[in-house]
Image (tube, rainbow, N blue to C red; front, side, top):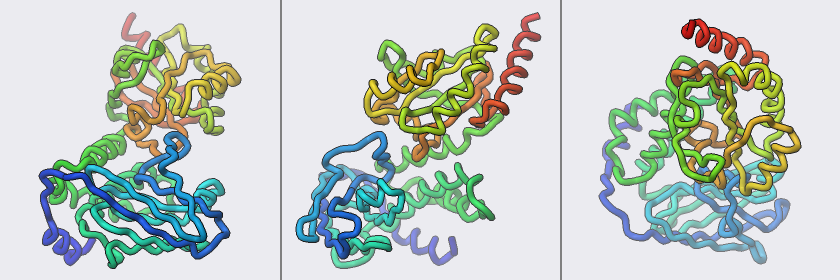
Length: 333
């Protein structure tokens, strides 16, 4: 980010001390019928595989649609064709919902064109930058999937945030999201694992730490609808059986819309461990683990709470489990 951009941001700083109810009206036009007549409008970060709501679905009539929302704070929203989402070919538009009118034009093979109150920008450039910070952290978390990745380009956003932007819009929930994303970014081997609430097998909210304290444990975040996650979990079954009586355990958490989906999948895959349920992202477990857009993840944790590995490969995990258990046994001699 260059000096001119930073100067522009500094000049635009506005502190938000409180918010009245915000009403945003969206009007849209479909320039194509190739993707059907159903559009999704939802808050950025919403994962439709887990959290879906009839209010997200907007039907066009004769190529036109409208949408209204009332919120407490200006927030970033996404808009796209439902059929594109289902086919994995997404041309997504973004706008900040505020007290305004938003006009959207949807196309077949390019991103929607969005005009806010007659201009193709919004009244809160700082808020846009805060969402850019959040996106930068999420990209950094998964930077290993990119080729020729320039890490410094995204780290500048973190520096800008802590140097300047952290005091902007102080009551806006974006700061909690950034803090959560930054904590998840630090979940690497050698670092301490985080604590968060989960529902135990009795359905009561408890700190995860009460379930894993003093154990070598694999945190297995999975979902019935995530094929690769289930394959990784299945591969761990023989390893679990070998070491379950030596201080090793698995704490599985399923990300689902309903309990039945988890129970059917767990029975089919024959998991020997019980699975906890994260229903409709109730406790934001995936976001706290930096896995917002993923089906799952794995974290191997030592008995002192240190992350040993974030691999999902059973062959890589077994030697680490053996080493951790041997250290434990030697300490008890």
